[in-house]
Amino acid sequence: MMPNAYPDTRDIVTEVLRAEQRIRPHIRETPLDYAASLSALAHCHAYLKLENLQHTGSFKVRGALNKLLSLTPEQRARGVVTASSGNHGAGVAYGLHKLGVQGTVFVPEHASATKIEAIKRLGAHVRLYGEDSALTEAFAREYARSQGMVYISPYNDPQVIGGQGTIAVELARQLECIDTIFVAVGGGGLISGIAAYLKTLSDQVRVVGCSPQNSPVMIESLKARHIVEMESLPTLSDGTAGGVEAGAITFPLCQQLMDDYALVSEEEIKDAMKLFIETQHMLIEGAAGAALAAFSQRREQLQGQNVVIVICGANISLETLKMLL
Image (cartoon, helix red, strand yellow):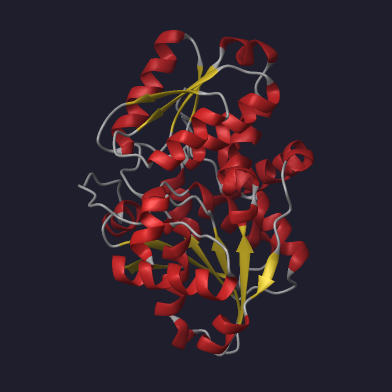
Protein backbone atom coordinates (compact mmCIF):
# COMPACT_ATOMS: atom_id res chain seq x y z
CA MET A 1 0.00 0.00 0.00
CA MET A 2 1.04 3.56 -0.64
CA PRO A 3 1.89 5.35 2.60
CA ASN A 4 -1.30 7.23 3.57
CA ALA A 5 0.15 9.63 6.14
CA TYR A 6 3.04 12.04 5.77
CA PRO A 7 5.56 11.24 8.50
CA ASP A 8 7.09 14.13 10.35
CA THR A 9 10.83 14.29 10.80
CA ARG A 10 10.65 12.65 14.24
CA ASP A 11 9.07 9.57 12.66
CA ILE A 12 11.87 9.43 10.11
CA VAL A 13 14.58 9.81 12.76
CA THR A 14 12.98 6.95 14.73
CA GLU A 15 13.04 4.82 11.58
CA VAL A 16 16.69 5.76 10.92
CA LEU A 17 17.62 4.49 14.38
CA ARG A 18 15.65 1.26 13.84
CA ALA A 19 17.35 0.83 10.48
CA GLU A 20 20.76 1.30 12.08
CA GLN A 21 20.05 -1.72 14.31
CA ARG A 22 18.51 -3.83 11.52
CA ILE A 23 21.00 -3.39 8.71
CA ARG A 24 24.32 -2.70 10.44
CA PRO A 25 25.48 -6.36 10.24
CA HIS A 26 24.75 -6.40 6.50
CA ILE A 27 26.28 -3.15 5.19
CA ARG A 28 29.62 -1.39 5.09
CA GLU A 29 30.38 1.74 7.07
CA THR A 30 31.75 3.64 4.13
CA PRO A 31 34.78 5.94 4.52
CA LEU A 32 34.57 9.71 4.87
CA ASP A 33 37.66 10.87 3.00
CA TYR A 34 39.23 14.31 3.25
CA ALA A 35 39.59 15.63 -0.32
CA ALA A 36 42.65 17.89 -0.46
CA SER A 37 42.15 19.01 -4.07
CA LEU A 38 38.49 19.95 -3.51
CA SER A 39 39.35 21.68 -0.25
CA ALA A 40 41.91 23.82 -2.07
CA LEU A 41 39.39 24.57 -4.83
CA ALA A 42 36.83 26.04 -2.40
CA HIS A 43 39.16 27.12 0.45
CA CYS A 44 37.17 24.85 2.78
CA HIS A 45 37.46 21.44 4.42
CA ALA A 46 35.83 19.09 1.87
CA TYR A 47 34.96 15.50 2.71
CA LEU A 48 33.65 12.74 0.45
CA LYS A 49 31.17 10.18 1.84
CA LEU A 50 32.13 7.23 -0.34
CA GLU A 51 28.92 5.29 -0.92
CA ASN A 52 30.47 4.24 -4.21
CA LEU A 53 32.27 1.67 -2.00
CA GLN A 54 29.02 0.30 -0.55
CA HIS A 55 27.77 -3.21 -1.47
CA THR A 56 26.34 -3.08 -5.04
CA GLY A 57 28.25 0.18 -5.61
CA SER A 58 25.48 2.42 -4.30
CA PHE A 59 23.78 3.68 -1.12
CA LYS A 60 20.50 2.14 -2.28
CA VAL A 61 21.21 -1.20 -0.61
CA ARG A 62 20.64 0.47 2.78
CA GLY A 63 16.99 1.33 2.21
CA ALA A 64 16.29 -1.90 0.34
CA LEU A 65 17.67 -4.04 3.15
CA ASN A 66 15.84 -2.08 5.84
CA LYS A 67 12.53 -2.61 4.04
CA LEU A 68 13.15 -6.31 3.41
CA LEU A 69 14.23 -6.94 7.02
CA SER A 70 11.08 -5.20 8.28
CA LEU A 71 8.77 -7.60 6.39
CA THR A 72 7.03 -10.51 8.10
CA PRO A 73 7.94 -14.09 7.08
CA GLU A 74 4.54 -14.31 5.35
CA GLN A 75 5.20 -11.19 3.31
CA ARG A 76 8.64 -12.43 2.28
CA ALA A 77 7.16 -15.79 1.27
CA ARG A 78 4.75 -14.07 -1.16
CA GLY A 79 7.69 -12.32 -2.85
CA VAL A 80 8.35 -8.67 -3.54
CA VAL A 81 8.15 -6.27 -6.47
CA THR A 82 10.07 -3.07 -7.01
CA ALA A 83 10.72 -0.45 -9.68
CA SER A 84 14.11 1.11 -10.31
CA SER A 85 16.32 2.85 -12.84
CA GLY A 86 19.04 0.51 -11.61
CA ASN A 87 20.68 1.03 -8.23
CA HIS A 88 17.60 0.46 -6.06
CA GLY A 89 16.85 -2.65 -8.11
CA ALA A 90 20.37 -3.94 -7.47
CA GLY A 91 19.99 -3.14 -3.76
CA VAL A 92 16.71 -5.05 -3.57
CA ALA A 93 18.21 -7.94 -5.57
CA TYR A 94 21.18 -8.06 -3.18
CA GLY A 95 18.81 -8.22 -0.21
CA LEU A 96 16.61 -10.86 -1.87
CA HIS A 97 19.65 -13.04 -2.51
CA LYS A 98 20.93 -12.58 1.04
CA LEU A 99 17.55 -13.42 2.60
CA GLY A 100 16.49 -16.13 0.12
CA VAL A 101 13.41 -14.24 -1.09
CA GLN A 102 11.97 -14.17 -4.62
CA GLY A 103 11.32 -10.88 -6.39
CA THR A 104 10.76 -8.98 -9.63
CA VAL A 105 12.39 -5.68 -10.56
CA PHE A 106 10.67 -3.45 -13.13
CA VAL A 107 13.00 -1.01 -14.88
CA PRO A 108 12.34 1.80 -17.40
CA GLU A 109 13.05 0.89 -21.00
CA HIS A 110 15.96 3.37 -21.14
CA ALA A 111 17.67 1.97 -18.02
CA SER A 112 21.44 1.51 -18.07
CA ALA A 113 22.42 -1.91 -19.42
CA THR A 114 25.19 -2.06 -16.80
CA LYS A 115 22.71 -1.64 -13.97
CA ILE A 116 20.25 -4.16 -15.47
CA GLU A 117 23.03 -6.75 -15.72
CA ALA A 118 23.98 -6.11 -12.10
CA ILE A 119 20.39 -6.84 -11.03
CA LYS A 120 20.29 -10.04 -13.09
CA ARG A 121 23.62 -11.26 -11.70
CA LEU A 122 22.14 -11.06 -8.20
CA GLY A 123 19.33 -13.40 -9.26
CA ALA A 124 16.29 -11.12 -9.46
CA HIS A 125 13.84 -11.30 -12.35
CA VAL A 126 13.97 -8.12 -14.49
CA ARG A 127 11.10 -6.72 -16.56
CA LEU A 128 11.10 -3.54 -18.65
CA TYR A 129 8.19 -1.11 -18.65
CA GLY A 130 7.67 2.56 -19.49
CA GLU A 131 9.71 5.48 -20.78
CA ASP A 132 9.80 7.31 -17.43
CA SER A 133 10.55 6.01 -13.94
CA ALA A 134 7.23 7.38 -12.60
CA LEU A 135 5.33 5.25 -15.14
CA THR A 136 7.44 2.22 -14.22
CA GLU A 137 6.74 2.77 -10.51
CA ALA A 138 2.98 3.10 -11.06
CA PHE A 139 2.87 -0.10 -13.12
CA ALA A 140 5.01 -2.06 -10.63
CA ARG A 141 2.88 -0.91 -7.68
CA GLU A 142 -0.31 -2.06 -9.42
CA TYR A 143 1.33 -5.36 -10.46
CA ALA A 144 2.31 -6.03 -6.84
CA ARG A 145 -1.23 -5.25 -5.66
CA SER A 146 -2.80 -7.58 -8.24
CA GLN A 147 -0.40 -10.41 -7.35
CA GLY A 148 -0.70 -9.99 -3.55
CA MET A 149 3.01 -9.16 -3.30
CA VAL A 150 4.82 -6.42 -1.35
CA TYR A 151 5.89 -3.38 -3.35
CA ILE A 152 9.15 -1.68 -2.35
CA SER A 153 9.33 1.91 -3.56
CA PRO A 154 12.75 3.36 -4.45
CA TYR A 155 12.01 6.38 -2.20
CA ASN A 156 8.32 6.66 -1.22
CA ASP A 157 8.50 4.48 1.89
CA PRO A 158 9.46 5.28 5.51
CA GLN A 159 11.63 2.16 5.88
CA VAL A 160 13.51 2.94 2.66
CA ILE A 161 14.08 6.54 3.76
CA GLY A 162 15.17 5.31 7.19
CA GLY A 163 17.71 2.97 5.65
CA GLN A 164 19.23 5.75 3.56
CA GLY A 165 19.42 7.88 6.71
CA THR A 166 21.94 5.48 8.26
CA ILE A 167 24.51 7.36 6.17
CA ALA A 168 23.94 10.29 8.53
CA VAL A 169 24.45 8.06 11.58
CA GLU A 170 27.88 7.19 10.20
CA LEU A 171 28.63 10.82 9.35
CA ALA A 172 27.89 11.84 12.95
CA ARG A 173 30.52 9.34 14.10
CA GLN A 174 33.04 10.40 11.46
CA LEU A 175 32.91 14.21 11.59
CA GLU A 176 32.10 16.34 14.63
CA CYS A 177 30.72 19.35 12.74
CA ILE A 178 29.11 19.57 9.28
CA ASP A 179 28.31 23.04 7.94
CA THR A 180 27.02 22.13 4.47
CA ILE A 181 26.17 18.81 2.82
CA PHE A 182 25.53 18.24 -0.90
CA VAL A 183 23.16 15.37 -1.76
CA ALA A 184 21.82 14.25 -5.15
CA VAL A 185 18.02 14.43 -5.42
CA GLY A 186 15.74 12.27 -7.55
CA GLY A 187 12.73 10.99 -5.62
CA GLY A 188 14.11 12.48 -2.41
CA GLY A 189 14.60 9.40 -0.22
CA LEU A 190 18.33 9.88 0.29
CA ILE A 191 18.21 13.56 1.20
CA SER A 192 15.13 13.08 3.43
CA GLY A 193 16.80 10.39 5.53
CA ILE A 194 20.14 12.16 5.81
CA ALA A 195 18.70 15.61 6.54
CA ALA A 196 16.13 14.40 9.09
CA TYR A 197 18.85 12.79 11.20
CA LEU A 198 21.52 15.49 10.83
CA LYS A 199 19.09 18.28 11.71
CA THR A 200 18.26 16.58 15.03
CA LEU A 201 21.94 16.93 15.90
CA SER A 202 22.37 20.52 14.69
CA ASP A 203 19.95 23.02 13.19
CA GLN A 204 22.97 24.81 11.70
CA VAL A 205 23.75 22.19 9.04
CA ARG A 206 22.82 23.40 5.55
CA VAL A 207 21.38 20.73 3.25
CA VAL A 208 21.71 21.35 -0.50
CA GLY A 209 19.75 19.19 -2.94
CA CYS A 210 21.47 18.64 -6.29
CA SER A 211 19.72 17.75 -9.56
CA PRO A 212 20.54 17.84 -13.27
CA GLN A 213 18.96 20.62 -15.32
CA ASN A 214 17.73 17.90 -17.68
CA SER A 215 15.56 16.23 -15.00
CA PRO A 216 14.82 18.55 -12.06
CA VAL A 217 11.39 17.13 -11.13
CA MET A 218 11.65 17.35 -7.33
CA ILE A 219 13.21 20.81 -7.48
CA GLU A 220 10.51 22.10 -9.83
CA SER A 221 7.89 20.50 -7.58
CA LEU A 222 9.27 22.34 -4.57
CA LYS A 223 9.14 25.61 -6.51
CA ALA A 224 5.54 24.96 -7.55
CA ARG A 225 4.58 23.73 -4.04
CA HIS A 226 3.06 20.58 -5.52
CA ILE A 227 4.39 17.52 -7.37
CA VAL A 228 4.63 18.39 -11.06
CA GLU A 229 4.67 16.22 -14.14
CA MET A 230 7.30 17.17 -16.66
CA GLU A 231 9.33 15.56 -19.40
CA SER A 232 12.86 14.57 -18.45
CA LEU A 233 15.66 14.86 -20.97
CA PRO A 234 18.57 12.39 -21.14
CA THR A 235 21.13 12.98 -18.40
CA LEU A 236 24.37 11.50 -17.11
CA SER A 237 22.63 11.55 -13.71
CA ASP A 238 20.34 8.65 -14.65
CA GLY A 239 19.99 7.63 -10.99
CA THR A 240 18.08 10.84 -10.22
CA ALA A 241 16.16 11.06 -13.50
CA GLY A 242 12.40 10.81 -13.99
CA GLY A 243 9.18 11.73 -12.26
CA VAL A 244 8.10 11.76 -8.62
CA GLU A 245 5.16 9.57 -7.58
CA ALA A 246 1.94 11.42 -6.74
CA GLY A 247 1.51 11.72 -2.98
CA ALA A 248 5.18 10.85 -2.30
CA ILE A 249 6.01 11.30 1.39
CA THR A 250 9.42 12.62 0.37
CA PHE A 251 7.87 15.81 -1.06
CA PRO A 252 6.80 17.37 2.27
CA LEU A 253 10.01 16.08 3.86
CA CYS A 254 12.08 17.87 1.20
CA GLN A 255 9.96 20.99 1.76
CA GLN A 256 10.84 20.91 5.46
CA LEU A 257 14.44 19.75 5.31
CA MET A 258 16.11 21.05 2.16
CA ASP A 259 17.72 24.47 2.72
CA ASP A 260 18.80 25.11 -0.84
CA TYR A 261 19.04 23.48 -4.25
CA ALA A 262 21.47 23.49 -7.15
CA LEU A 263 20.71 22.66 -10.77
CA VAL A 264 23.73 21.53 -12.77
CA SER A 265 24.31 21.17 -16.51
CA GLU A 266 25.46 18.03 -18.28
CA GLU A 267 28.81 19.71 -18.93
CA GLU A 268 29.21 20.50 -15.22
CA ILE A 269 28.37 16.90 -14.29
CA LYS A 270 30.86 15.61 -16.86
CA ASP A 271 33.63 17.89 -15.58
CA ALA A 272 32.92 16.87 -11.97
CA MET A 273 33.06 13.17 -12.82
CA LYS A 274 36.36 13.58 -14.64
CA LEU A 275 37.78 15.58 -11.73
CA PHE A 276 36.78 12.85 -9.27
CA ILE A 277 38.28 10.06 -11.39
CA GLU A 278 41.49 12.05 -11.85
CA THR A 279 41.95 13.11 -8.21
CA GLN A 280 40.37 10.23 -6.27
CA HIS A 281 41.25 7.36 -8.65
CA MET A 282 37.82 5.73 -8.29
CA LEU A 283 34.75 5.36 -10.47
CA ILE A 284 31.75 7.64 -10.00
CA GLU A 285 28.29 7.66 -11.56
CA GLY A 286 26.34 10.64 -12.83
CA ALA A 287 24.14 11.20 -9.76
CA ALA A 288 27.24 11.51 -7.58
CA GLY A 289 28.70 13.77 -10.25
CA ALA A 290 25.68 16.04 -9.86
CA ALA A 291 26.42 16.54 -6.14
CA LEU A 292 30.10 17.17 -6.87
CA ALA A 293 29.20 19.61 -9.67
CA ALA A 294 26.94 21.52 -7.26
CA PHE A 295 29.84 21.79 -4.81
CA SER A 296 32.02 23.27 -7.57
CA GLN A 297 29.22 25.64 -8.59
CA ARG A 298 28.85 26.95 -5.01
CA ARG A 299 32.52 26.88 -4.02
CA GLU A 300 32.81 30.64 -3.40
CA GLN A 301 30.14 30.37 -0.68
CA LEU A 302 31.92 27.60 1.25
CA GLN A 303 35.14 29.20 2.48
CA GLY A 304 36.25 27.93 5.88
CA GLN A 305 33.37 25.45 6.18
CA ASN A 306 33.29 21.70 6.84
CA VAL A 307 31.59 20.42 3.69
CA VAL A 308 30.41 16.88 2.91
CA ILE A 309 29.63 15.66 -0.60
CA VAL A 310 27.73 12.36 -0.75
CA ILE A 311 29.28 10.22 -3.50
CA CYS A 312 26.15 8.14 -3.85
CA GLY A 313 27.29 5.54 -6.36
CA ALA A 314 29.88 4.17 -8.78
CA ASN A 315 27.75 2.29 -11.32
CA ILE A 316 28.75 3.75 -14.66
CA SER A 317 28.69 1.81 -17.94
CA LEU A 318 31.86 1.31 -19.95
CA GLU A 319 30.25 3.20 -22.85
CA THR A 320 29.52 6.23 -20.66
CA LEU A 321 32.98 6.07 -19.14
CA LYS A 322 34.58 6.04 -22.61
CA MET A 323 32.45 9.00 -23.68
CA LEU A 324 33.36 10.85 -20.51
CA LEU A 325 37.09 10.40 -20.97
